[in-house]
Image 1 (cartoon, rainbow, N blue to C red):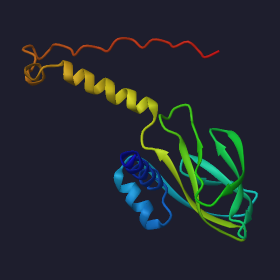
Image 2: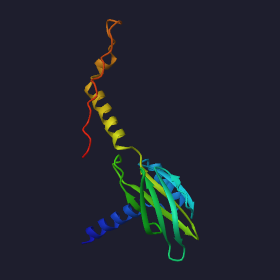
Image 3: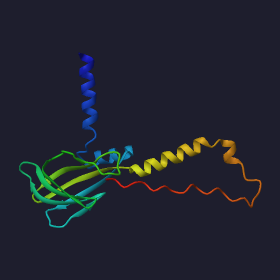
Image 4: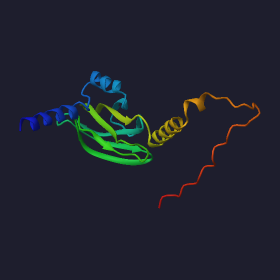
Length: 169
């Protein structure tokens, strides 16, 4: 029983550590290097403001009850998030990211909010290209990598032609 309680406490501290409450905590999360963090200060407006991979607009901020209503513009899609509480992460996935994008509000004042956007450091396509590069370099032995062609007129091999992928239905 005590071991299970210890595991729960450890899990709770790990999960609570992933949301930054202050700028200093945000800097510590950024130093981990797992995600890109962009801070924002947004006043109530009809215009969207860019914050990292998305655009935000504050529709309503209630400082008494610590919640806000937001409009998000992600990849030309408009999302509405109503009643977002203080320190409550708003998570949503984009097609080309392995992890969800996270929006967190750190402070709410009258018609003004401050917070941050946490996005994955790499997109899915970048991760695939990095793994392909690592596989190709691992397959090539070190002796092959250091050898120069005997004939300087020899042309390097051309890559295989790219295949066209089918469109999603």
